[in-house]
Image 1 (cartoon, rainbow, N blue to C red):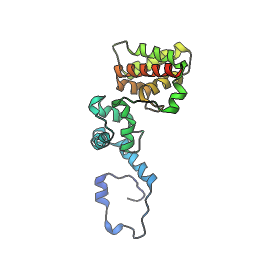
Image 2: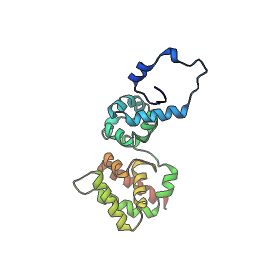
Image 3: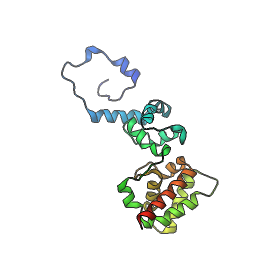
Image 4: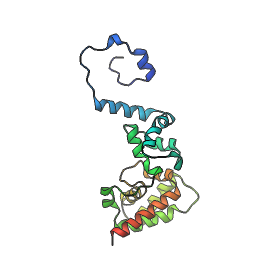
Length: 199
């Protein structure tokens, strides 16, 4: 095994020999454990992850039947998290409507200047037959050009509106999985929030 750090379960069973266990006091490296955990989540089949994730979803009151395909949601997030608990928290917004926004993110981007941008995004995202990440990306590009602003001035208000926070996977893929109806509802909710804050 030499300096190898990553093993499959079968390899560990095959290579383990109690005679090789060092008699010196063992040490526990939390950072290394998280790194390994992240490696296994990143490289595991989404179905395998979903099986082990179900308990964590239950703990957070998340029913994956109420939103997009859990396997697709896992695929979108599995290279971004270190633990299953973190994954359950990261995907919660797909299945549960949030009551409030992450304060720092909302203060930074859900401002009066974002209102016309969110309105145009909502209007354009509600029409058209296609609903793919490519179509959504094109609409974000169009609104960016229309308002003569940088991409962040469009993508970030949209991200906070639909996820409740300032961090998510690619916004076009996130919005696509969230769905047209829920996206429109959450953009409206963010617009109402801005109007209340601005008065």
